[in-house]
Amino acid sequence: MKRERVVLDPADHRLLRAVQRDASASQAELAEAAGLSPSLVSRRLSRLKEVGVLRAVVGLVDAEQVGLSCGAIIRVRLKDHAAASVKMFRDLVTRMEEVTLCVMLTGEADYLIQLIARDLPHFQEIVQQKFLRCSAIAHLESSIILEYLKNTTELPLDDVH
Image (tube, one colour):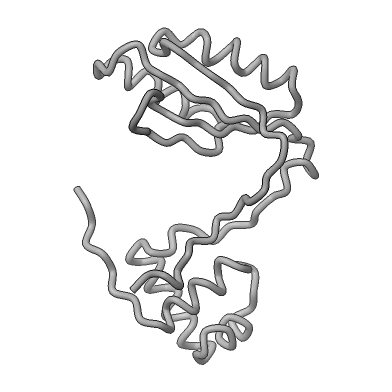
């Protein structure tokens, strides 16, 4: 069931853009960026969290700096779309901490997965020990990420009305 869209004003958009750029910014810095008072920033952030617009305030960790140097994109086609197969696949993916993104697609592949591993041998181990042992998967195709040209979590809020 789809939730009703929350109405946001221009100050909400400015505040959200500032939080997306740097969630560790002080209330005063966010207030300046949004054109609001610090106390109003606090109330608006609370409201945005309460209604589900602001899902979380997180720190972004550089994968290579913590020893995770192998990123990959995996396209998966399930053997069928029976409830048991879909559940088996979804259960596998949701338990895997290496998976940073999994989306259902239209087209040839049913799912696209982004995952991060320590190195190529670790990636190979993940594929062989987890994905290839999942009987719900009919076909798997992987590509190693050579370079991130753009990797952001910021949404384009300037274009939303």
